[in-house]
Image 1 (cartoon, rainbow, N blue to C red):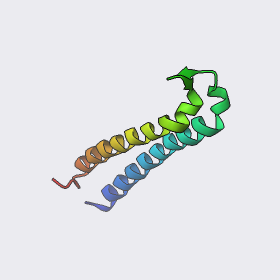
Image 2: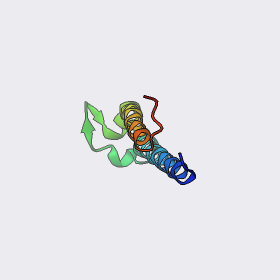
Image 3: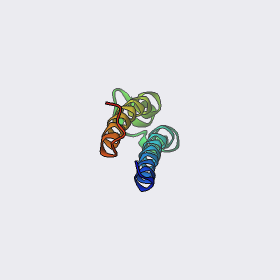
Image 4: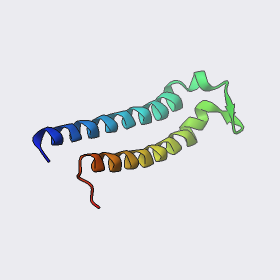
Length: 85
């Protein structure tokens, strides 16, 4: 892999890491803690949405982000020809 290609690969890798971390922080800290009073009026599954995000939503979002990151990195690896196949 050339130096420019390697640099672009790592820029794309870091970009998706920061995006995933931002989404995770928004859901877990933002929705579950900081914005909980605003979400208290919205009911889901017998409880308010803020409590749901703090207890279930952040975990489910994290699992979805893991699968998305895996799919994206496999695609990126094939694009830059650094896949393991």
